[in-house]
Length: 139
Image 1 (tube, rainbow, N blue to C red):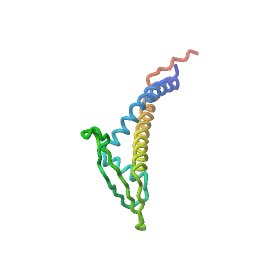
Image 2 (image 1 turned 120 degrees about the horizontal axis):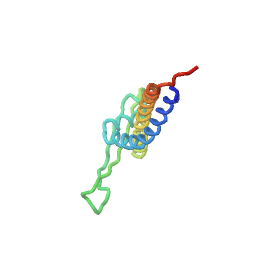
Image 3 (image 1 turned 90 degrees about the vertical axis):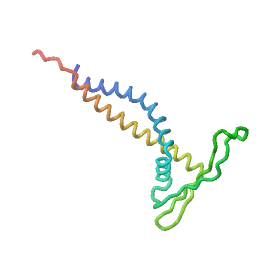
Image 4 (image 1 turned 45 degrees about the vertical axis):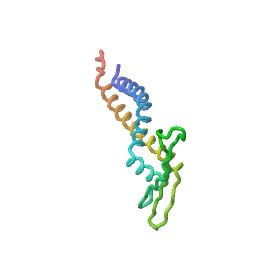
């Protein structure tokens, strides 16, 4: 086996393992970002109004989700208001804040996971090339 073949084998093995790893990292990483309100709010504000100079969230009405079970979860309505350089403001409704924030969270998790897989693939290619000892040429 030649060094380039060892490198390709290491790369292929890592990409197969890393592809499966992404099925874990993206959902769990996205959910972890959503679970930290400070990170989620900043990321959502950056996605919805990247050129704004200030933003604020307004939470309205916390009510039970299931009217038959008052001890269950509660739902609320959130608006994002962005202020721009010229003093104008734009308000984003709850649906847009939620959907774009969740999408951005999973996108960031996917990008970070893919960067990790690519880095480990490079390391696997280097190790695969180093482990292979070429056969001596007999002439």
